[in-house]
Image (tube, one colour):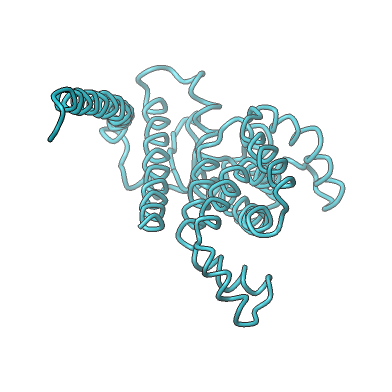
Length: 299
């Protein structure tokens, strides 16, 4: 028979649980409200552009000349610049980040893992302007001397810095996904005669594919929105190019460089908000896909 004190105690625990759920749910809802308000603000300031400038010409235009007599607000040069820098960063960061995650998860002794993982995570604490100074003073002269360039301020410079900035996210989340693979998978592979390397490549990594893919996408989502580093090291030339050694201008660098000198309410002002809204939607889509992959991995 239940004691008289246990019933009220259980009811009190349930009430406290409901209160905690309400508080946590309310705090989580605040982030959704803030996200919605940010998107509403961007759209409110971006849409007036299309009263005076065709939307099709904005999204498909090949020139960005906001200060010329005949203004041009073509998004394509900025989009290709962002794409070139991001793809270059992915080519560098993804193989290196996944390899480091495999080493930390599958090969490194416990002491090395406990030392290496915090060091990698500390890379995320370095301000982006510091990366920009490193790109200007170290990476730029190195690229100029090695490849014989007129200037080291190029898409390659930005890609290298962004790759380093993406590494903490890629390594940390990939390592978590790899460690979540059941130990029985590894044991079964080794018992069938596979080497440790073959087990990592053909068993562990494929089993954690969804989590690793989500880690890569979140890392790239982090660098797509990076501003200061690319503003300082990519040369800021608004041109359509697919040469990694050319100077480019990204969407984020355009907003950061021009917004402070743009009169309020002008077409140029609204065009910059349109660039920001487009970047917001791209980043949001990347993060949504990554979140879906993480949920799939958890299931």
